[in-house]
Length: 227
Image 1 (cartoon, rainbow, N blue to C red):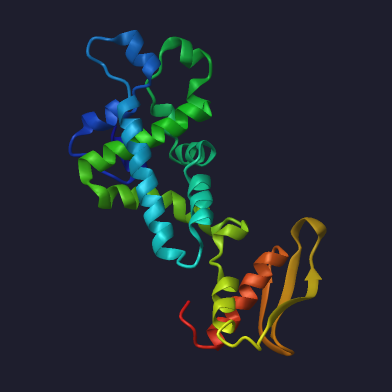
Image 2: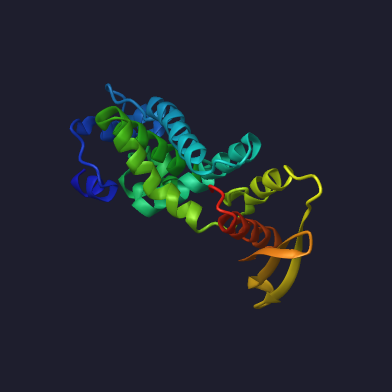
């Protein structure tokens, strides 16, 4: 348990919570004798994870509408992401599995690893409270956000800019692609945003939409808008 706690960067006051989080149902059913599976912890961890991620996105992506926030949260707490987080920790090697699950490759099964991550999160939450649970989750979620190229990760600077410009009905904003560089699989796009015929911002991105968002961001910054 000491090795795993070091990997988690969290020292349990009640290590039995962590032990419970590692008990797959196949192991609990096989051993019995008072051994409980991690399913209840998984249930709690799912909710704690959702609250932490939703709260972070709400606080830091202020201009993204509810529907896009929902999609972004879903992508961060999906089985694929949680399985990846578990593999970063090496959680699979610490799991208690039944013999059949062990032989069937359960330590590498995505669903088992994802569930175990949620169970461990719940154990940390019960042992150390929401602040420790949040610290644990964001250690994995923030790099995931930073390394994504999805348009949805970016704040919706275009909408923010449009809302400002719309205060003057005679003004109009347009986006113009001014350049492309790099190989087909890793292109960089350059875009200018024009207010009527004047350039008010430039941006680059790995897609045209990203570049437009970055151009709008520059325009907002130059206008002194809060972003």
